[in-house]
Structures are given as C-alpha cells and as structure tokens.
Length: 148
Image (cartoon, rainbow, N blue to C red):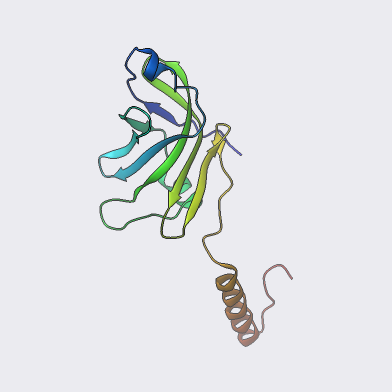
C-alpha cells in the first residue's frame, strides 16, 4: 500500500488539557466533505476543535467508504482519527476511519499512515446475484467467465 500523506491542520490551544490528547489513538470526530473542503471537528467528550484535512483523494476515499449523503455534501459522519505533531498546527494522520450509518459500520481509510485496503460495498447476497447475472450473460455470448 502507498503512503496516504494525509495531514490535519488544526490549532490546539497551548494548555495541558488540549495538548494531552494529541497523541491519543482514535480521537472521536465528525467529518464533513463538501465543496469547501474536508472538515474534521473533534467532539465531546474532548474539548471541541475544528481543522481541515489535507492531501485526501476522492477516488481513494470512495474505494474505502461509501458516500454517506447526496448532493453537495459527500461525507457527513462520525469518525476516529489518530494524529502526530509534525509542525505547529500540522499533524500527520496515522489512522483514520469513518462510521457510515447507511451501511452501517466503521470503514478504515488510513492505517499506520498508509491507505487502508479498499472494501467491498456489496453484501454477499448482492455478490452472488452479480455472479449469477455475469454467468448468464457469458453463457448467452458463449464466452468463459472471468478467471477461467
């Protein structure tokens, strides 16, 4: 897998309360992707902060998590993020997952700084139906199924 190179630009107040949770794994957040960018909001029970995710690629996101909404907003969901400080106000994203309510479940986006494995968006039943449709189409055309 290739490096994700995601960074979070967020200003943490210079006090013990805020600085103490920078290195925590799986910080709860709300994630929103729209035309203005990819916003990450750290939420309760931690002190609330807002930042911007940089370096993301729509095609890689969509392979790892289905879009949660339609229209102008592509993602508006809860997430978990693990970060490490690289420069003042800039954090490298070590781990990042989105919770998509419509499917439901956690979808890993980044693991250990690299893009997570893409996930299958179909249920086993849908995959079986697709295989049956493909087999029927191949039988009609006289071609062999893929992989044979």
